[in-house]
Image (tube, rainbow, N blue to C red):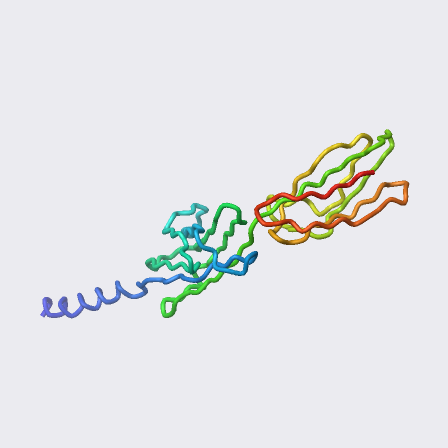
Length: 207
């Protein structure tokens, strides 16, 4: 009798161990917003972060083909979150948190992303007849904001002798403009420049 009961219980225990197991499928498409096409050649990496930890553990990675599509299959584990990171030379990198609770076992988990090519602008400041009390102020009007490499959007002040170039990053093929004025004079102007992707253009302020 004891052996018979054990035989009944064992399958139930085995079945209960399998409960909740499965495989997540995370897939999507990465696009190039600058040229309105798929982003081929980019590296897409997937990390997992255990609950209560800040450690990012690599799960898988893939290099995008011409269609810009990626797909990861990975076992269901009780993680706090997953992180997907996308990088390619000449483009702004992306990093996105995907929380465990948002993932489904029943359907593919589609996450599409988009990034832009980098460009640069050199803001050239040249005081042609410097005086000790000269005071130039400029502030960014248009241009990429909020990235680690971005120049600030606050007022920038320069005094006396000034002959310098400040390099700022921007989205490729987009406008970058600054509004400047020379304090104590009527000199003021907005200067705008479209910054070609992967290249450096210049805004020159002479006063």
